[in-house]
Image (cartoon, rainbow, N blue to C red; front, top):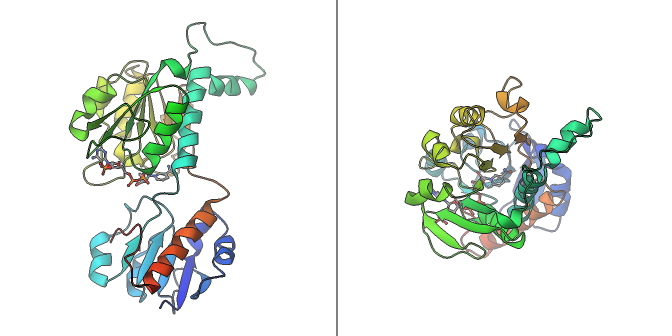
Length: 308
Ligand code: NDP
């Protein structure tokens, strides 16, 4: 049985740590808010950040409040005997809605008008710029929780949806699912390309010059996965040279996006601050995952969302 679960103060970047502590009041282990220097007595930790001090702290289990766990050192955790679980499964609706919002904004020109509003400017886009999503196609690269959330909403908006995943089995709301090896030909047809794969050794730089060059000149690239899945320098170049038509980006090679990044100033780029999954309900979803895994642990079952 676990005795104490620490909620690392870093979760405060996503929700109030006290909200999660209070939501877990009903479980047996004590739950307290902790900092890196104050992990004594904790056998489990719920965290956003990773610190090497976690390896020295007698922890049995770390739960990441994000789905992406690319910053955690899997080998070191394994050799220290610490189990790592992640939060995949809870972001499909929020990220799906964010991506639908990006696509609608490009179709209907909403970000363009919002920019003009700052200058009190009444200026319609040229007659042939606006379009409707029902006549357009989207390629979703990665069809897990995020990709399926995107596909369901794109399908509901009447779009032609195709997707790419490692194991190309049929997925609801996706017309055709292609294997990773066909990425370049699959992105070539789509008006929107949405990247929703985890960052791994295999996916780092997955979208680079070759893939961007294969895309349509009016295509919009959307990245809600991790910055390094995309070659950001190649993307800036593709946007500056008109190789593609635009981008909507929630994640970046360096976060926060540096103030001197050319991406900030591009009219055909929407930048959001790694906020695609944000919802006031986030802490409750994490509480549900943690509560379920405490139960599983007590009942001798394997933990859900186990990574290490
Ligand atoms: P899942 O594990 O549910 O899904 C991952 C999908 O990616 C699977 O369909 C998998 O394919 C596919 N995939 C993996 N490698 C490749 C590859 N080389 N080529 C093609 N497809 C591949 O993850 P989630 O959907 O929950 O999250 C995905 C990532 O999104 C997270 O790791 C995180 O980095 C990021 N994320 C970002 C958020 C934000 O706030 N912007 C919020 C949440 C997540 P297969 O099914 O065949 O194995």
